[in-house]
Image (cartoon, rainbow, N blue to C red; front, top):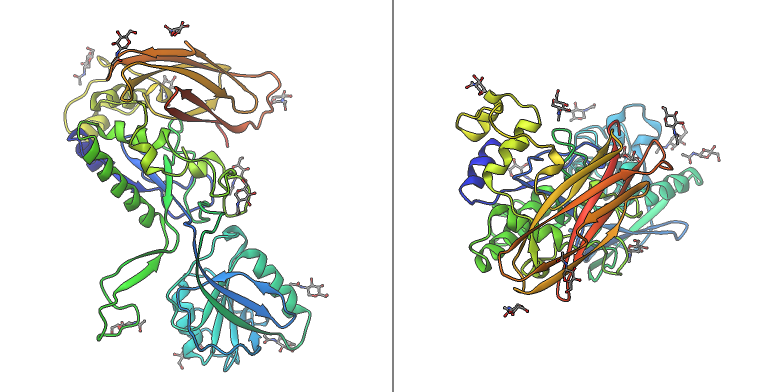
Length: 460
Ligand SMILES: *[C@@H]1O[C@H](CO)[C@@H](O)[C@H](O)[C@H]1NC(C)=O
Ligand SMILES: *[C@@H]1O[C@H](CO)[C@@H](O)[C@H](O)[C@H]1NC(C)=O
Ligand SMILES: *[C@@H]1O[C@H](CO)[C@@H](O)[C@H](O)[C@H]1NC(C)=O
Ligand SMILES: *[C@@H]1O[C@H](CO)[C@@H](O)[C@H](O)[C@H]1NC(C)=O
Ligand SMILES: *[C@@H]1O[C@H](CO)[C@@H](O)[C@H](O)[C@H]1NC(C)=O
Ligand SMILES: *[C@@H]1O[C@H](CO)[C@@H](O)[C@H](O)[C@H]1NC(C)=O
Ligand SMILES: *[C@@H]1O[C@H](CO)[C@@H](O)[C@H](O)[C@H]1NC(C)=O
Ligand SMILES: *[C@@H]1O[C@H](CO)[C@@H](O)[C@H](O)[C@H]1NC(C)=O
Ligand SMILES: *[C@@H]1O[C@H](CO)[C@@H](O)[C@H](O)[C@H]1NC(C)=O
Ligand SMILES: *[C@@H]1O[C@H](CO)[C@@H](O)[C@H](O)[C@H]1NC(C)=O
Ligand SMILES: *[C@@H]1O[C@H](CO)[C@@H](O)[C@H](O)[C@H]1NC(C)=O
């Protein structure tokens, strides 16, 4: 955050991973408001590997290793975690399979236990196993990984895990095979939030909604410095990996494109363009879901999924000057010494103004309900057509009333700035556990400028 502040002051945009500690609330990192905080979503490509059980049940899964010659006959399956009290065997940690007969069998391995998915495959292979089925645990839900495995393998979702465990419990001779179906493009559930993608609210500054955005971060195919199969005679140095470390560079690339078409835009202006134009629906035009296949929470998606073409022409932007962060930091009650460390120069909050977090000119709202009513102002800069009339559409979070003054903004010039005031009032009928979301949408004949609104209890 300190380095990013100095970079931002010099007009350098900083895009960071939200973290891979999801799906738990408050699991974010890199949440400073001068940083773009990026969560991870799926893309519409699946690398299918279907586990077919002895009872003919088919379980969807994924693998980047797609052998052409894997036999289609049923093979015995073994679940080392079932009988052996040593939990390491359930996770197929290295050399944990010594006391299990896995030779010639398909081995079921649970994800986790400090061993990577690929290393589990290596352990199975070393012990003589013929293939592996990786079992998602509950919190991973429907998020699956297509890894470059060292043996035939598939990663099934948690529904698949439950089915396969019920199946092996139902027979003394459980069998399965894996059918590799290759690459399938056009998965309409994309973009879907990955289970590992870290979630808000932000601990450090709950009045700023984080993450800001989600972008492609699951099963990303990219160049890799070494051969993944240790083959020194190949130049095919590619790999597939997942993580918010894959999604934040997607956003960096998009920022570079936006910077080239709008060289005069500040880092905050570019962030605003990305956030207010983001998509909130999946490819089948319904709300973006998370790993449980339920509509994703705003603390998982932030403003939504990045839409680069729309971000290039946002209509309006919420800009922030570097000096605007001083009243924000003073309002967080940081000491003068702490703020001076961030700014790399002396600051005295007694002579600076101080604002609530929600008053920073951010493109989103994160409202903690302690008091009954909160009012903030926002200033928008016109970067679309010189003459444009924008009218606000409000979708209030449940249990909250939202009023905006004025409800119409008439721009008559490029780079003109106009200000509005928004008041959030808790309704008497709201339950004590209000945690909901909505949005403000400023619409002109050409543009839609959307600001997400999150509302939550301080003790979420
Ligand atoms: C996060 O908080 C929400 C709202 O209280 C709750 O519904 C959800 O279950 C929480 N998620 C986790 C993973 O704890
Ligand atoms: C589990 O134990 C039962 C009975 O003790 C045995 O029949 C079965 O083969 C064992 N399964 C595995 C996977 O070791
Ligand atoms: C498994 O076998 C390997 C090689 O023989 C040995 O090094 C390792 O200690 C054994 N592990 C366990 C858990 O018995
Ligand atoms: C296995 O089957 C038994 C008897 O039908 C049942 O009680 C038990 O809950 C099952 N266990 C699992 C993990 O499905
Ligand atoms: C897209 O999301 C909606 C829910 O918002 C869901 O019903 C639909 O199944 C998703 N699309 C696909 C193809 O999964
Ligand atoms: C590749 O080779 C390196 C160095 O010899 C070794 O450390 C590593 O375990 C090998 N990886 C695989 C997947 O065999
Ligand atoms: C900062 O201190 C003031 C005065 O004590 C208090 O009202 C306010 O809630 C504090 N702000 C934060 C973000 O802790
Ligand atoms: C900060 O400003 C206040 C009010 O002018 C003054 O009393 C105080 O000495 C200043 N602190 C520092 C460290 O300069
Ligand atoms: C904007 O509208 C005003 C008044 O209607 C007009 O004078 C002006 O030429 C228009 N500007 C542009 C760029 O169209
Ligand atoms: C904007 O213009 C419309 C008509 O074009 C008018 O009704 C409205 O009052 C104006 N709003 C403001 C805030 O000036
Ligand atoms: C909310 O909490 C207060 C005090 O804790 C309680 O008196 C009130 O009945 C609660 N309201 C609702 C709607 O649950």
